[in-house]
Length: 305
Length: 281
Picture (tube, rainbow over the protein chains, first blue to last red):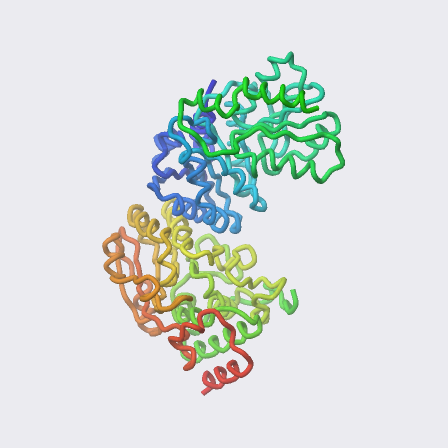
């Protein structure tokens, strides 16, 4: 078990040694986003921008336009809240900025709604030529950080505060835009992203591994081929994310399904109301985003079909 | 692309002659561009023209044939709506053919209504959503420091523009990073869409605000090229410089000067003829 923000912190600090173009910016949350690991190792390539995310994003764009590979880090809600700066300074300039949004979803628990990134994917998914990643575990996070450095263009990487189970071994090979099947089954294809992948795997185990489970770690571009294949071989596609169902992974899958000829139906697991304070366990349970919650949704689906 | 007849590689880099005659000629070009494009911002283009002419004519190091030359000085027009002035100067310097100018704002033209770095690399950054250019300029200045390069970064902002909060975030951070290779210039023309900047959201005391943020603050008459030539390269060690350029919105055309309504409208045929006549006299 490891939080994907920790995996990010370790990997970006490791990459900093190999690639001197990598710089990191944070907005007074380095201890939480884990960018502090890079800061300690490379103090001259780390920029503490204070509680001023708009300026941080613009500064990152300027660094990128001068050949640096900046990682701009904050909580997902705060950093994508500066949408206009991402839209103009980063996206339209095709500035090679890697935006790190940690503390995604309701799973952060106690801090409550104001600190929860719940619409970060929705807002950034609208931008052309913008890649959105959401890794499911430690190994995948590290591979995605490396892929982001290789990628010549802006991207957003959505990370968890909470620990998530290890799903992949070091022989796993992440590819941008390609989703991985974690198990093959019939009738229902569970498409999870981020912290929900572990919950999907566990829920599927509870029912004897009879369903297909897919890890959607690139949310933009979605794996259209995989969605088409799943839709042609399953009755239900079920998306699961710790994000609003509006505009997130569920919407992305709906968009693809609405444009292909398929009898498969879509069921979206996610968040539809404002967040709540509580212990992470209680909050995740409340929003039915744990394995038991996913299993409950699955039994509901079996009654629908 | 309608009239993009010349290819960029067929033109040569040339020095902009920073004199009265060029200023008059470029004002005429800017008006013709905005007239042809049937929209644009004459008032704010004219207020910053001498600043941009002086930078490109006498101060900035650049290679028009290689706009992405690593050692170049950077210029960002954060008040992106003033871009007709920048386009006119860039064409004059040979960054792109002059016959592109009259395609301003037309479908397919590289001369977008606001700067687009990918279409015109010499603009350095897409701007026009106000308040963002200084942060980008700051990032460039930081990269210059990291790489121990001696290029300088200049950023022109509108006075109305600095009502944006992001400008003050950058105002706070540039001194922290001791960016003495960064110069911000405020085109203080006192005009914005809804009225004078003094009415809409007063900036006073402007110099004191920036001094309090630890900038090296200097003031200049923004249409006096001789003074601009002297003041714009000013720098002090360890601090960014802020130049308050006192300018006149619509400068150079009698019926446009200080008239807020000329912020963002194109002249009609008659107004164009009248203005061109004034510029010829």
